[in-house]
Image 1 (cartoon, rainbow, N blue to C red):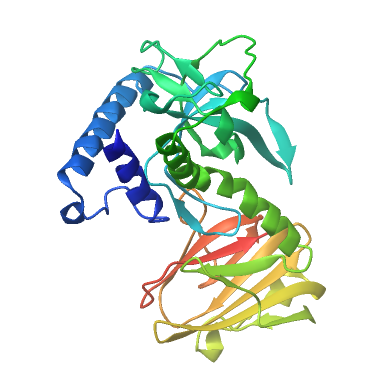
Image 2: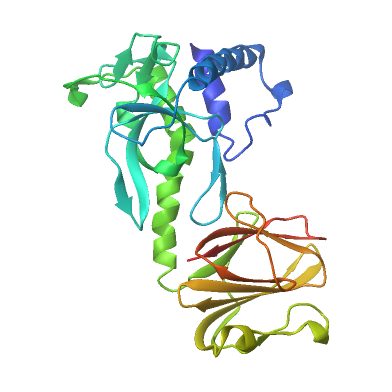
Length: 322
């Protein structure tokens, strides 16, 4: 049993690392044993998930969550492994985003206590499991990756005042709280983003570090796109008079390359211009390449997270428009 605790703690000490980046050389044989156990669980999950369709999120469902995603601030969040969760609320709204409340599921029934739900039925997800009622948290519905099934547990009276946990159970719960924190980060980042956007509607995220505009002005006529005077692009000619349009300017040196990014908010849409003599590519949150009619200029963009790739710069530049 202790090897499970050791394994989970070894994971929770490493935040936002890819699932397969664990150095096996530093793990004891017992760690590898439990890793194999988790791997076998995933095989069972995959067999189940191949047979399921994706319904709308509702109370009483079991879902497999994404292991990695981009949060509201553009940070790449990576869990140590994808978690199964039990949905305990209907869909609610916050900042125009859908969220639910969930309770994580664990296969380690050895640590069950009387303030949680023990399901001894391997027909639901392929193995017996615990619903961690003490680890309830809100998450965005976009983190739900695969629908597993419905679970009718009826009305339960759980007396949380009479819980006597062993030291091993306490350590297990600490590890689980740390390992599942990547899920609730989806809501925490959205709250922080809503607080930020009262003053800043546009920002860059480079290497999970937020960068705000160097300057903001209220008047824009021309944006120089590349280091060639013939390639200056008159926004006034294309979009009409752009006075009194909120404008954000970023000037950064990344990997030794100087870039300038200018964003103009035109009513409910955005115009993005990148002054850079190298090849530029812009993708949306789904990885689709955005077409450009003029080199290094994108207009008619809606709010959301975009990814800027510039030849010569290794780091991914993420820009959030809202």
